[in-house]
Length: 170
Image (cartoon, rainbow, N blue to C red; front, side, top):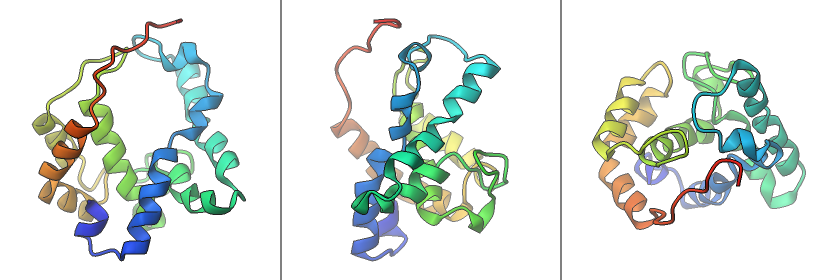
């Protein structure tokens, strides 16, 4: 929806749509106990969690149609101000697809319930993303997201998971 709003051509946003579900594919290399841990991760656990980016890159690298997902997988935790990971990229050095994915990923994380937090409302999530404009997020991506945030809400509601979360350690 953001790509369409930004005027990206159909082929570009279709490729992004295909790549986006793979952004966290590297989490298959992270222990379930860590992924499902209720509460804050230790510094050591957070360092391990961050390796999901390089694991994901290895998975999609050189795999034909998955190659288009590489920028999304590699860059969705980079931040506009350079304080993200794994490379500490900033501004336009972050691929545009990763900058867009960062907004969508954070929105999804905020509105989703997990073993370590309750979900937030759509409005709370929009405000947090708006507050991250120019620091965490590309200002143009935030402006586009805020402009079409009702579409995000509708999409999120359509795909909401009614199933209870697994218990930690199960």
